[in-house]
Structures are given as structure tokens and as C-alpha cells.
Amino acid sequence: MYQLQTQHYLRAAAVALVAAVVIGVVAATLLPPRPFGGLFRLVLALLGGVAAASAVARALDFTTNRKRGTAMQLFAAGSIVAGSALRVLIAGDFELVLEDGAGAVLLVIGVITAWNRLA
Image 1 (tube, rainbow, N blue to C red):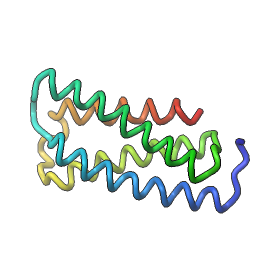
Image 2: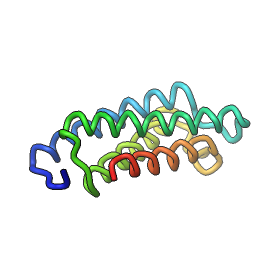
Image 3: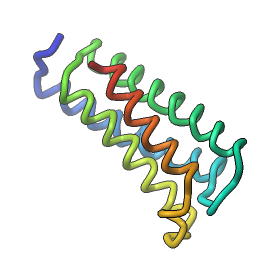
Image 4: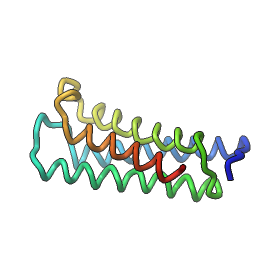
């Protein structure tokens, strides 16, 4: 379960890359960066982070035959981080990165959830 071969790493990298693009596009569409959006945006970001992390973990499970460990956790967390970065790139408003509370919630909850699902 914790011993990965080269094919597992390659599959995980491919899945993480595709998931990052999907997460970035969907998050930019549904939750564009804004300075403050209220409680609804924070709840949407929380649910989005959990959903994105769960989807990435499931996809990695499926393609790597349920492999676990630090490598899988890093692939999942990297996918969430890359998706969040792509969200900001698509939106094109780089000045709001530090003021975007919903984006921070999405990122932190997503990484924590993905990390724990693949432990």
C-alpha cells in the first residue's frame, strides 16, 4: 500500500495535473477572487475545498490502486495549491490575493482534507 512504483508516480502526476486545471477553472468561475464576500462565500469556499480535495483523493485512489503515503499526499496537496494558483491567474486580479478570504479558506481546507484522506 505504501510502496509505489514508477507507474504509480506517473499516474498520480497526470491525475494531479488534470485535477489542478479542473479545480482552477471551476473555482475561478464559481468563486472569483474578491476582497470580502460575506459568510456565503466563506461557506461556499469551505464546501468547495472539501469537495475538491475529496475528488482529487478519489481520483488518485482510483488510478494508483489505493496507494497511500507521503508521496500521494504531496501530489494531492500540490494539485489543490496549483488549482488555487490557476484560479487567481484566470481571474487576473493579482492584487486581491492577500485580501481574498474565500480563496484562503478553499486552499487551506482543501490541502488539509486531501492530506488526511491519503494518510
